[in-house]
Image (cartoon, rainbow, N blue to C red; front, side):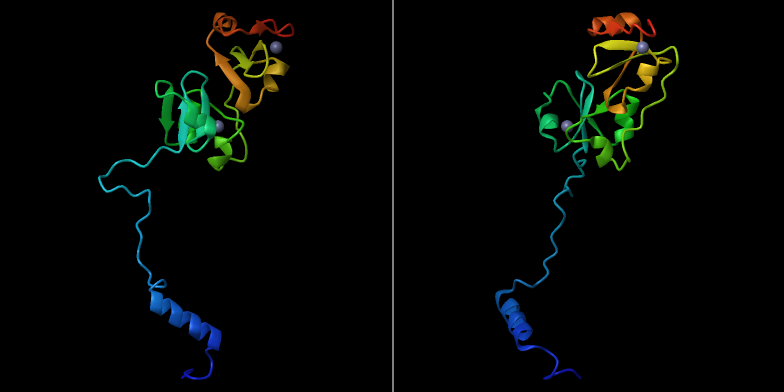
Length: 158
Ligand SMILES: [Zn+2]
Ligand SMILES: [Zn+2]
């Protein structure tokens, strides 16, 4: 039908070259993640059991987590449920497709602190409200907060 008229010379030449080198031959390449022995693909999230920080698997900080402190997670939610918070460098919360960190609900009587502040609060404190999901620390008792180096807030006096 189209023979001899519609194929531009350059394209025809390109096709000839490809055919000549074999570069255009579509050799099906299995995806790198597929493992032959049924081994699980690497977990997308790396948690640090010490700092409770959660990283993307490719985060430089995530890679530095020592094997003893390393915990792998399949999902971001799974890590959050265990009290991990997202690294502010690699933002695994965003990687997980979340619009931003969603702070888990804090009970009014709960003791909470921030990773970037020295104080701890009651969950009902206005300052507790201001702690972002990424910085939220939860303590079982005020003693635990003090042991973590935090001081009681002078507003809510936890
Ligand atoms: Zn990270
Ligand atoms: Zn407070």
